[in-house]
Length: 228
Image (cartoon, rainbow, N blue to C red; front, side, top):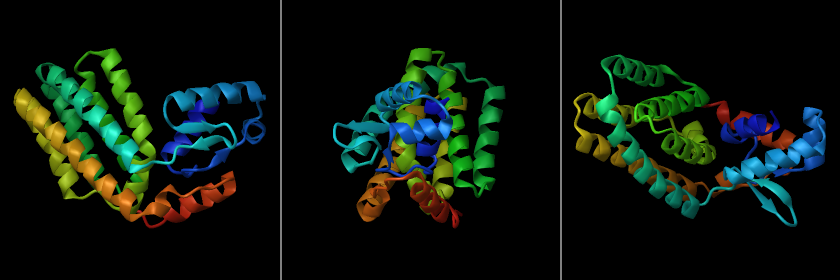
């Protein structure tokens, strides 16, 4: 429960990058002992969402351009493989559901909801590959990418280009064109990586630190106030 709640708050920006997580404070907040908190920290560290510093303790992951590039290099390989395996198994019924998800992304003005729908689109598509271990690796990488994706989406509304890229992936899959589907996924992820790199370079304060929960929450709320 502790790991799940902290994971959600890191991914949606409530806990800003650089926020220090103190075991005693987290334990008091969730009314648990420090033992499950230590276990939660270990799990989140393994997922790449926090870093444990010998001097500062647990600190929320602060994204760098290097981290971003490495994550997307791996994602391109794994997600291209997943869509190759998924394309022959994609049914018209699943395709209609995926198309509906794109429509819902186009309609929403809530950044958190857009991100949830975006993840659902990709993971539902890749689920057709019927490769649980592959999907678990992809899910972990997407979860680790979520904090800086949220920062970007919260400040910049995904435009028609993102919607068109999702449509291109889906159309290629429905047509049974594996090569086109892989190329569409590669373009989509590379475009996202390029945008995020530019954002992190342009907005260094996006990686700024916060030492206590109240400051992290207030900053997150101010940032989300003008979302789309």
